[in-house]
Picture 1 (tube, rainbow, N blue to C red):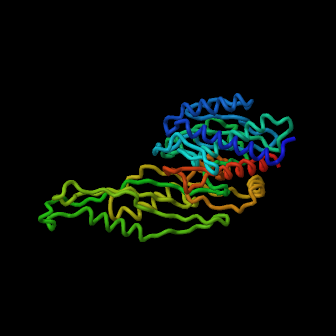
Picture 2 (cartoon, rainbow, N blue to C red):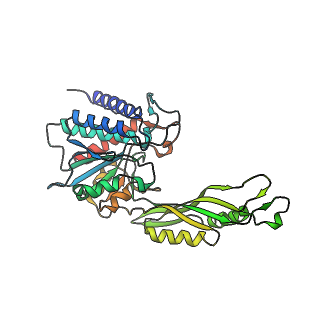
Picture 3 (spheres, helix red, strand yellow):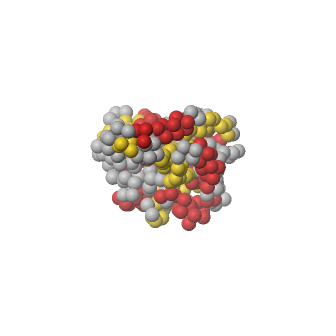
Length: 365
């Protein structure tokens, strides 16, 4: 019989090697074909029923509810563009490289759990598990394949809880903020910089609008005991034609992270009320948020396994798409969000092992 230390060493090596293998497969958003084939091969060779569900999506394990509760473990396969951080590398403490935190470490944990359950000769607890993997998560939500997948796979919508393995540093984070991106255009009148009084400088209009918008400041809403902070920010600002021309137009991008208490329509009306006195608003994308699960015994079971309290998710994640399909969902994963999308992206090997053990305890309690 292997010692506990041997088991820990085996798990550490297995998770780190699998994460590094996933990091080294190029899978920027829109180019997920190779990683889709890889995870299908891993599932099939490990004895886990799996299929290509189309449009960068992979389904494995159970795909509908039986007499036992159904849990979805979900993750995305794509990454942001590389920043000279692929191939990855392993150090004693970390796996480093593109997507290590967001979220190939989480995918590695999903694969490990699926294969461990498939090779176990005894019943692995009181839950059925579906593994849902998909691409294009790092693009605007309108391009996500997850919503269409849930629409064409009704069995998945019978799930009792979904766990999205986004980077949370192994905290359980519930709900998520809504997210609007909008173009904000300020109109003035162009003119010669030697006679600015004959022009109407659009930069002045933009400066006044941005100052007024940022003066609104953050606002907090408490939902089921969790605090979500609503914020609006100008993230880009462009103006100017030449060094001797007063600009007649300026443009900005506005990003509004809104409370999950608001509908998409309510959030858009609020943003227009703030911005339209200063310039024209063109909403480019609007993804509503998600409220936390309410009185869900499986969430209680996950919290007990993690020995942690629940937090609000101060971002938008695909839990919103799951919630829109009628599936209560939370975020929980080994990646550290502080390292997501960075050139020095990494995930701690200890965090991979902790996530694996917490989810195994949750699934097999």
